[in-house]
Length: 588
Ligand SMILES: Nc1ncnc2c1ncn2[C@@H]1O[C@H](COP(=O)(O)OP(=O)(O)OP(=O)(O)O)[C@@H](O)[C@H]1O
Image 1 (tube, rainbow, N blue to C red):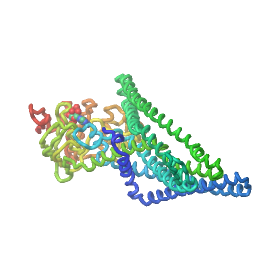
Image 2 (image 1 turned 120 degrees about the vertical axis):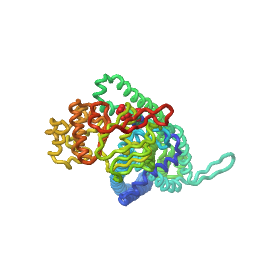
Image 3 (image 1 turned 180 degrees about the vertical axis):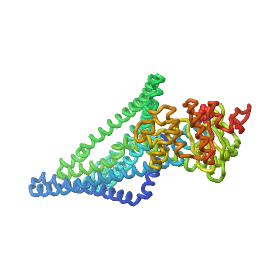
Image 4 (image 1 turned 90 degrees about the vertical axis):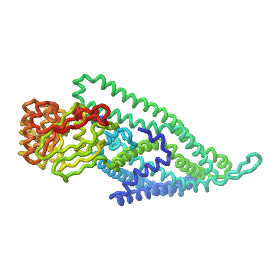
């Protein structure tokens, strides 16, 4: 995958961020969102106004001190209390509303992305697309991280950084005026010419911060790419940990701990290596920003010292200029202070942009396979081309038909594409072309059924709600699928995918079929883990059920005994040398 953080220009990134942020403010929640944002902006402006009041207060207060004017001193203490109270109320409101908006925004964005990811098999196809060649659509890694972490970071950073920038700009505008007036005119001679500079401290601040920003950018530039990589290494590490947990039994049986440990070490090593580089880059930046910050504490005093000691200005004015300089310098240093965060923000939004673009590309792609439901009495596949993600053709110009009452055994060598043909019929395989028509949606039993954790009745009814069936129906399905021992455990909650044996999970998948009673059934190695007697009982039942319902069944099975329960054969035969596709399908 390309690294957009490195290639995109700053304005390009801003455009991307705008594109990611805008949909929420145009969504069904737009009025709530816009009003909240407007209030937050007003609160930020008010906060700056309080700073201006505070600066003016500084002037009056220090003058009172210098003049030893007690009456003014106490009056100004009272004024300060009011300013401080306003400041506190604004700070609380600002914090609360900002967090609230951020949370709502994240919730909306997460739901929106989740909806798009789960729709139209996008979650499955994006995984497939990672191995595909030839497409120019971006291929995002670790969608889980993008949905769970990036969304939170994006909304957080967008809010805090944009409000911070707004604050900086408004503070700058407000205090530049004060600084201009209070810092007076500087006169100096250079090369025999006398110069007078109005608002001298404004220029000093500008030059000071321009130098600071440029140096920051030069020192901090590597952080953008490093942050981008860091998130990816962390996600890879986490992903591998999850895989070890999921396949714990298989790994333990294989004695694969050493290999997995090595793999985990490798991934964690990548995390650490990048992190070390990140720390080093950050250290340089911290060294500079800390020096820059410290220098600014005394910088204005040094520049103003001659005017103060010559008596041209009072202590109050000196303090006011110093505080105004501090504010101007603070705002101009926004970039210096936030470089780190801007780098993370940029990396996060780049990752979300890739994810968004991949989902869009998927949604916009017109499927090469036309799939029609309801227009025929049976399955009709015509001109069917099925390929692998890398473009290799498994079968070409294939025509297949399935009529009510048919029971077909799909045969062929391992890896020839039997399951892939099922995926094509199901409409989830994107590398297929041609036409498939079905009378209604069929039910598929995959090679490895998915058994969710939780209550047994939910796992049995999956993906339908368990409430659709009563206890008698659920128990009967378990009995008929040769799982009577589970019939009394409908309300038990467990990690079924780890507790049930392979054969029990296959029987649970068959129990689902018996419960749903589909007319059109595609079973992929549905009984491969069962003994022959159980296999015979279940196939006899399934075949009788679909025939009675006026439908049909296609099964993939390697065991010859299964053939007895099927009237027809579809066979994938290796093609002759030089043929475009690897296999040809014969129907007998
Ligand atoms: N997601 C994928 N990405 C790349 N190749 C894939 C993917 N899924 C399947 N394939 C490849 O497609 C080919 C056909 O796979 P498929 O599972 O359809 O074979 P099969 O005939 O059902 O095999 P078996 O009898 O062993 O189950 C195999 O070479 C497999 O490696």
